[in-house]
Amino acid sequence: QVQLVESGGGLAQAGDSLRLSCVAAGATFGTYTMAWFRQAAGKERTYVAGIQWNGKSTLYAESVKGRFSISRDNAKNTVNLQMNSLKPEDTAVYYCAADRFSVPDRRERSYTYWGQGTQVTVSS
Image (cartoon, rainbow, N blue to C red):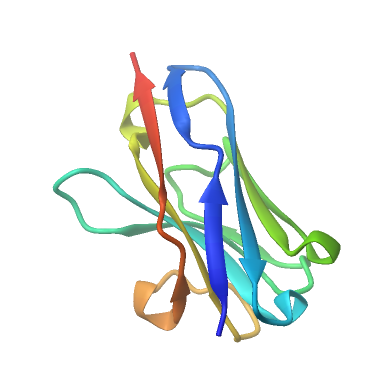
């Protein structure tokens, strides 16, 4: 069983930066592939970024490539999402997800463990 808790969301203006964090408890964090998804109001949850258990492989959605960066610190059981050059369309609830497979997967159904989410709102 893995418990995930996100933090770092909030209000930002277009062009600003925010850093989200997700802390994991209850498992050997270093064996899990981690990912961030987001869900805008009235829309389906979509993939944002993922990172392999050892940090060697990352995978980004096209919409955030070049602006967002995912990283992890296995010693601190933490995965981070650095979000730069924020746009109003980045407004969503951001979720941290985890599961045990070798490389990041864009499919929501691949992840067993989810956090409660943190709201990010970007104004123009």
